[in-house]
Image (cartoon, rainbow, N blue to C red):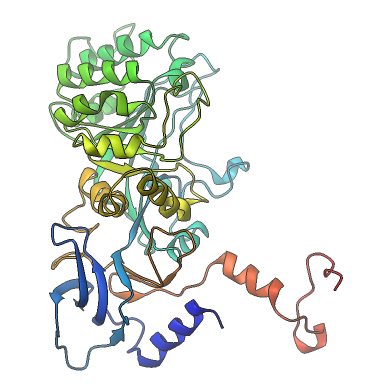
Length: 429
């Protein structure tokens, strides 16, 4: 039995009914992701699915108690900006709902900011348990830009991976700029600013509804209006430093509250981003000039941004590999980012950036009890989550991957004894 299996058995041995949302975790190394930092030999009491107390020698008669034996306890992690629950198999169109394409060909730009991907979310997706057993507790559903759509991809929101069908917190609007969006804007990134300014003019009534050049529906104008004047958060996919500079000017001119996704060259504008209080979702593994938008990518991007005072979170943009978010944070730490900031980039920072910091992303009284107990440093790739609690409930540490592992690694059994056929010939021993 693996270490994870031994611990799971211990949890079951001492467990109250699995539906219980009251829990006492004793003697943990609690990484709070708050200003309290890391607390040694500390207890966390959960009542009604929320954290009731964090301290020493907490008492709670009759409540399920778990001895953490000094192991690390963290908030459940952020899975990045992903398509978990809206993109089951990327190569199978019938299972993908993450982008809108109403245009007749690749040059048509149909702008529908009212497009909301959370309406297509499937809480029964097999991707949820795959991410959960690795300690991922929430993600931001992203709306992508594609041919026949526009650089304004649409709206997404935070989804907890506890099987809930509805989003948590406010909607987020997605915009794609730079070379990735140039094909939708006349093959010029200069046109992106022209068109964004036109959308602002339409939203503010300077272009009449139904005008020949108008791009927005009444619903689209109403949606965009919510994001102007410092309203909802707009997440902008952009990498090149010169594009980020223009973005800062545009957001200041129109008072748009933005965050950056990607930001491979964001470190070159770190002081300006800090002054404008713009969080950046980075991929710390971006290091090579994979295209002309990120010639100056560096493994030190996260560290340089944080040193300048920028709020740094992480994203990989891959739903099937959300579990690798810890590896991203670990690489950022290996390249100069302080460890506590690495954990914050997986927990508190994305929660606060996305308007759910009052409920998720840290271990403090009043927060939802989305917790993970690890067998070692959670930023080490070899560490595993021994138990995940969402809303105080211990989730089954099983997924499609663990089922496949157990099927094909177990000792062969004949079919008459209930054994399953192998999917491929057994290895020659």
